[in-house]
Image (cartoon, rainbow, N blue to C red; front, side, top):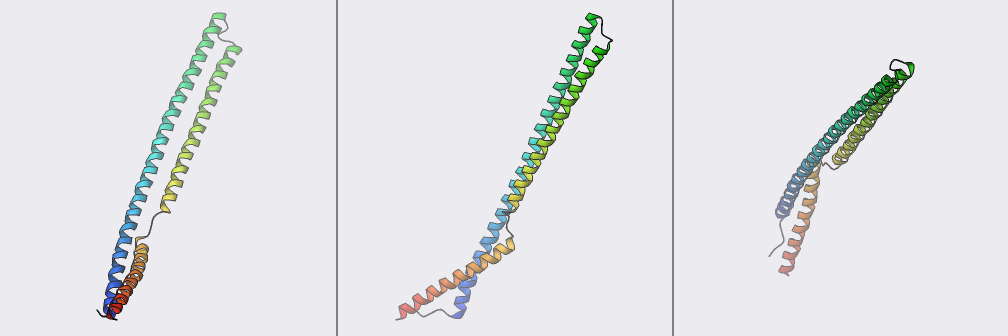
Length: 168
């Protein structure tokens, strides 16, 4: 068996480079698809958490308002029984119940805003992390082609060396 010709060296190297480049491009596209799917899940997660937080805040707000109205009703009944329903004390107690409810609703809204911001930031951070894992298929193909070409040259050199060794 004789050594390889230059054409055979080039053919082996080119075949290896092409196969490696193709595999690298396919892998990069699959990686990018997985990144996009994970980003979509992160966005959906954020929306679900945000919606749950909004519903919870709405329920807490309603409970706070109902409780304030219940307290105001008790104040009216108690002051009416005492004959002081229209008095500065009664009005002050009614006002304090309304003010407390308003403060509590404000706190609920602030907590909701903080939760929504946290969910949004968490999703954005996750998406940014995922985007860092994305690969440019052209660059991946080029790198795969170079690596495959080198591997092909090494393979061809091995074949050539083995052919020359058989000759001796």
